[in-house]
Length: 338
Ligand code: TRP
Image (tube, rainbow, N blue to C red; front, side):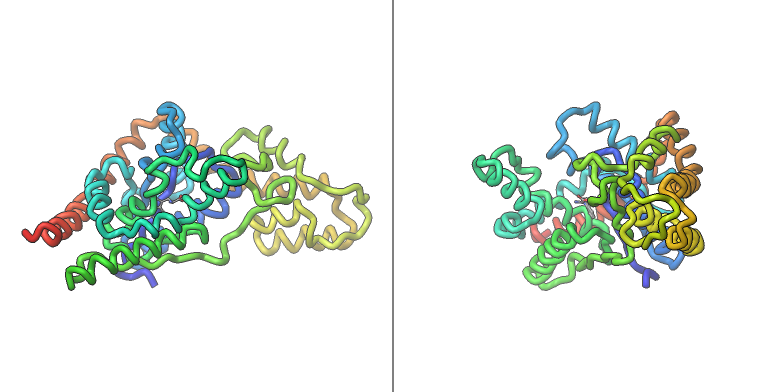
């Protein structure tokens, strides 16, 4: 499926990722990238730091988030000798391409984009003017995202459902430019959504999300992880009471991390009244620590030796940049008739 294809993944450095982000998005993205490379594809993996400044204005916070994201991907198994791993802000051609794309981006596309619409809806709910606090960076962000994608002749963009529309906007802009110049200047990208990816519930049963305050932290110390897991909501049924595992929150979270045999064991134990909530929480804790243990060590190492990561990112940008330069040149030649 990936042979000869360009696969591009972008990640915004916002928020400190939690276990749900890791299992539901970060790890699958790394695995998909590695798989793509193994099949003879090319994998671009970048940190969308220009996207982040629309919302975050504190440079210290931004820098911290960027570091965390870079280290998490490396710790999770991204191989920078195989994937092109870089920062968006190290590729200035992306911004020049964005400017050219603007001329072919109907304003209506931006009005319809989910990220902008969500911000407007939020304002309306709060009784504020539609565009309150909305900057041009947020408004136009699908065009910058289109440049990220189109600069690299991307074939496949692995994304979550919420980002499909943005990839379609990139495709539409590329199509409009190709049609105008009667030439395949830009490759049309496709979004790729993996439906098998886990949506991990949080400790209160809603989707795990920082805004709900229901997360199991990632790369925290054992104590913090244990505390979160032991706060997972349960009821007052006694251990010996046989229980249907479905709907038991600890079991639901376990699904996203356990092997089939481990899951079977927990399910049988609950059904037979042999496992109580304390025991299944310990089983979940063991599985979480086993899953993230090695990555956590690597993460801590990289955070403490960020100069090494900085060097990897610079190297990645150097390797990735020529392709963006080529795309920009192609576009300039066409639009300026040179
Ligand atoms: N907008 C994406 C997000 O919020 C991040 C992103 C920026 C991206 N540019 C991209 C994703 C290009 C894929 C391709 O998650």
